[in-house]
Image 1 (cartoon, rainbow, N blue to C red):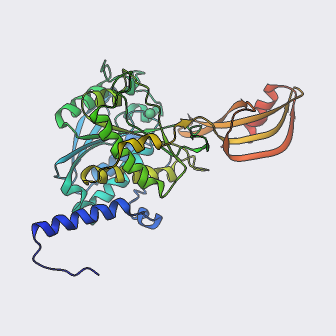
Image 2 (tube, helix red, strand yellow; image 1 turned 180 degrees about the horizontal axis):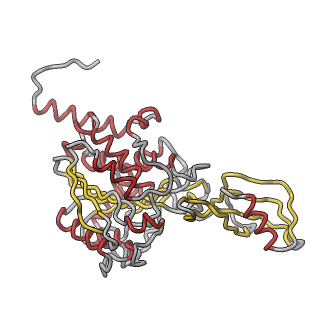
Image 3 (tube, rainbow, N blue to C red; image 1 turned 90 degrees about the horizontal axis):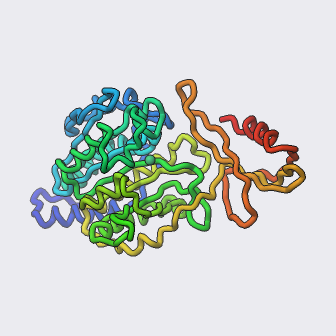
Length: 388
Ligand SMILES: [Zn+2]
């Protein structure tokens, strides 16, 4: 039990804060604890400005909210600022309008920051700026691109979209030590040879084609290692590393190149979780452990970043083991693609004929024998079997 003393010395407080940070980094949050922070007013795959506006308006006073600017179609893009500490952290989500898991995780994080733990640790050590939906026009239409058909994540140099310009100007005004760039990846992404779904993937973006390990990239990798170790306690074989091929027009690559360490988090599939409510929790935990690692003095070894398995594309919703197509035995992989229809997200099956040499994994495996005289007949069968 802790004994309370009224006369805290500065050193004692510092030691206490440091101990708390270590405890935070080692703590495995239970589902019950997580549920106390989960923002239950938003869920599912389709999240628009209309859904998050009431949450932004109801944030407690410690969150300073301003309208950062407008989207191409004139929707508000908000900036939320919280904390008074030295470490400056910039977080944005939904630069791809149909990638909403990060937005849900951000509002869970806001609840954590507002808690006693959040206020006594993170908010003393960090100043955090959040843009919870950079592409509200894309969010409305459930598209990756903005209303001008521009992929904001390939517009970091040209800055043709007003949304890209807003993020760019915010970056240079705020000058963060670290950025978190939040995305969603398709359910087909798997982790290394084990082929479990890549529920969370990380990337420390390259700054050039040679993928040089600059000091900034090493710093980014260190934070990712901390996040990986923390998340490993929850989903040990479901964390991947995204390709670090240099994309000259991409946001993360250009921010990292400009000296602002940028961590990419890709939220992916968890078995059976098509609405990404389980993944959301791991996205939140990843963010929380990343922020904790940024202000703690733990010196994580950046080289461990390379031990995180690479992403592959070998995960399916269902694998049909015994399909006879035109008299030939085939293994069929079905993956589900989200589409926007009648104002909601539906999932349609896509088919891949798998090679015998490929290893794969799936939510479901079907061993029953099926016989189809044409690929069209197989397609019709699968479209009916996988209506979700
Ligand atoms: Zn994306």
